Image (cartoon, rainbow, N blue to C red; front, side, top):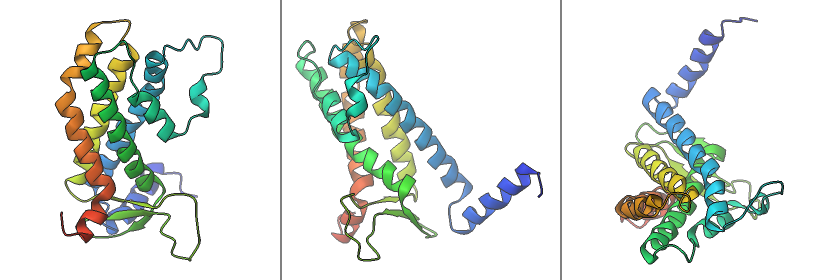
Amino acid sequence: MNNNYEDRAALIMGQLFAVHLTPDRLMKIGAFVVQYGLFETTLERAIWTLTETDVQGVRPFTEKLNAESMFSSFGAGNAKLSQKCNAVLQDASLAALDLSNYRNSLMHGYLIPSETNPCFLRNPGWNGEVRNKKSGDAYVGEPLLDLAIISARTLHEISVHASAVFSDSKNEKRIESLESNVREARSFASELRYLRSLMNEEKF
């Protein structure tokens, strides 16, 4: 077997280029996946902080939560925080719900090649099967991956501040200052998740 790993990997990437996953698109997919992962890993610590849970020496309650429950807990905020801060956290949780659906479709969907707007379809039911899992899609044409990267970055920033909101009082104001960014992320994430419906309704 040829052990020139760089050449072998380049050959595989060339096959991806051929189905319109261009170098730029692949780079942005990678950036989104990494940035979303940074948000996810910080989210748990943020929830511990917001629920004032001491996890030292115990199994965290968050281990049993699915993604939707995690976002719900995050969005609940804390009564000690300002109304505006809690509102920003709630909006961030709704953005996260939509963005996670987009991410899941991107990671677990069937690739539908397209020169202008490739798509990944999750649980399409092509064989007539009935699933409990939700269907979804993730388009990766320009500028959609940019929207995904920006949204994931905003959610990461919010979760970082939330994870230390009681150890540094400035973090409450930092969360509040991101209100417009979170509103933007929520709009972007909703568009990413529901793009097929928007196109079908001719609203895109």
